[in-house]
Length: 329
Image (cartoon, rainbow, N blue to C red; front, side, top):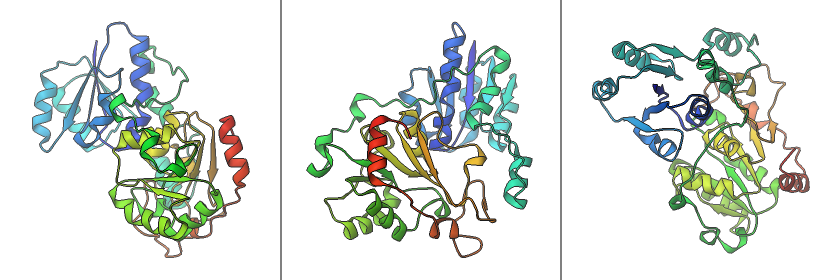
């Protein structure tokens, strides 16, 4: 059997699909799995031993479809279920199963704050697409694979951060999913130990402001210096991971790290909280305006940004470090 899996974005969403590939490979003899995503996410797929071949969208969808047609798939599993994947499914003309995006429930929750969301993680909704094949969730959580070449030696870090550190992924695709910089500084002070800041080049300036305020002994700004998988290597070697609702949160979950996740305009009830790893969620659960989006905004729609500005950091640093060693909260 030859199966094509479709998921075009983004980092976290792709990591959340990894149990599907693993469970298919383990349950079905002689299955060949291909994965189709955007070129920018190729490094997330290449190292995955459960994926036999990757196809990547560069610019023209017609070119990609032509390549996929040549494979003569038996089945298409659509874990994105948007216009682009609908076009691909129609043009391939193969039997296909798609994830239920529960858009009505999300709309009611975000627009009217009527919470009829099922208590089901997105991973389990992904797994529903292959249930008819007799494939069950093995309960082993997410996968993320880091090649030896992408492993980051702790000798590359400042001396102050080589024995033990907290990883703080300060990024987030949308501003309302990120703490303001002044609150990041407050949180880092609260953590109180060596911290490696992680993010892409867009997060570097914020990281520099934090480093300038708190000093090199506490802060190493790694934002923009490492690839996704190199950043994952630093996550893997950390004691505990602080993060917003972003891709590195799911990579940390795949690496079975203790996670402290910070939530603003989105909520865990949308079904994308840390999956099968020790985690502590920090959110302002009393605000009537949350969630204001299922993916985030560039700015607070109401202008006050209370979900992040009024967030309480009731954290005991000794508790965080000790529970990280025990790998459970």
